[in-house]
Amino acid sequence: MNAIKYLGVIFVLFCIGCSLATAEQQTGTAAYYHDKFHGRPTASGELYNKNALTAAHRKFPLGTRLAVTNLNNDRTVVLRVNDRGPWGNDRRILDVSRRAAQELGFIRDGLARVEIRVVD
Image 1 (cartoon, rainbow, N blue to C red):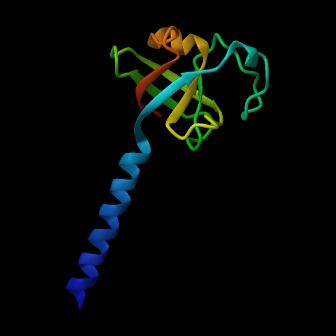
Image 2 (cartoon, rainbow, N blue to C red):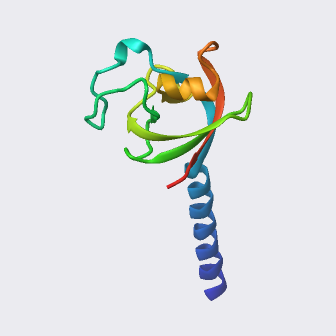
């Protein structure tokens, strides 16, 4: 009986570890905010600034710092989550500011395949 409890505890700890690993790192598509949103309020209450290094994510807590890497060119930038989204497209995992898209090198394409990793 103790062996069954022991195996159960190991299984639960394994599952928790797996879910934490996937929560801290994600791969998917990023887009950037249109200039028309410049100056509008974000979910954090601050105004969107197209020149700041910020991002929108559906679930990471506001204020979370993310290392975002463009998988097409290996450029990386650290962004702060200050908004919720992206909305309307389940394939996108992140919306970034215009400056972030410039530094990541995907202004012309509009979209990029990225990897995001929590750095806090």
